[in-house]
Amino acid sequence: MEIKQLIETLYKEHILKKEEFLFLLEHRNEESRSMLASLARTQTDKIYGKSVFPRGLIEFTNYCKNNCYYCGIRGANQNAVRYRLSKDQILSACENGFHLGYRSFVLQGGEDPFFDDEHMCDIVSEIRHRYPECAITLSLGERSKESYEKLFKSGADRYLLRHETACPDLYKKLHPESMSLEHRKQCLWNLKEIGYVVGTGFMVGAPYQTLENLVDDLLFIEKLQPEMVGIGPFVPHHDTIFKDEPAGTVELTTYLISILRLMNPHFLLPATTALGTIDPRGREKGIEAGANVVMPNLSPVAVRKDYSLYDNKICTGEEAAECAGCLGRRMNSVGAFLDFCRGDYR
Image (cartoon, rainbow, N blue to C red; front, side, top):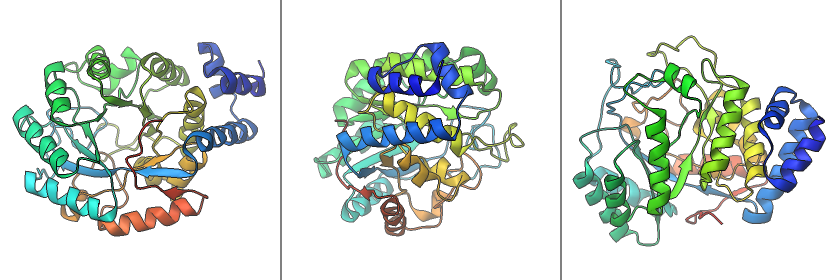
């Protein structure tokens, strides 16, 4: 096999066999990185131009009933400083974002039982009433199909649920027995069936992860056909069992972003905050590799540092306007611009 031929095949046919994907990852080099990124950026520009779509992120609760071994807000972490935003605080963050130009909001939180269907449907329907032209994305973890249906009817358009890894054995090493990969995948199928614009994704460089595991992720995404794929490097947190594990790399993460772009040129692909955390130019490198979404933080500054999934998270002390201004300049530096529209899948 030749890498150049594999990349050309992926560019034309949008899929490779398992062993071909593995070869592409195992034998990556500067030439293959450059070729992939160039083709990925070309494909992005054909469909989305130089637009990078900002999603206003509101991290409204860091309570979580789960105990994912890699996560700083897992339920068993007694050192976490917990908070919940009120409905008024969430609406205030949306109002601030709307005045700054945002037309896409993401409500993200741990799996907090306090925010049951009654609470969440009330919040979502009020946002929909106030901002009928805006997209509303939820990232609330695993819920019942009935719950997803209620939230959809209340006005939510999109749902983000990263599967984290498609490999059952690796999933068990990263999560307690109470959590099930099959259940998580079923949630994604349920979301698709209901009619959500669906986003999934995975960590890159997680403890115990192999390149073959990453190929399994690519093949699962090919099967699921979501509209958005969010991948980011694993970053350790000091209050987890993986605190001394090395972080994932920008190099492999951006390589996979380019592969995903060629798998489906229409994907919405974020350049994640985690990328910017491990490299000062991480998000710019993500855009150059084919990403076209960023998620500036609209949460109140007072709570940002407490939504601590991993260590050294960036932008925890900036006001929303500062965050957007800084990010806009960063995007301009790589020939792109923040496009404050809904940023729909095309």
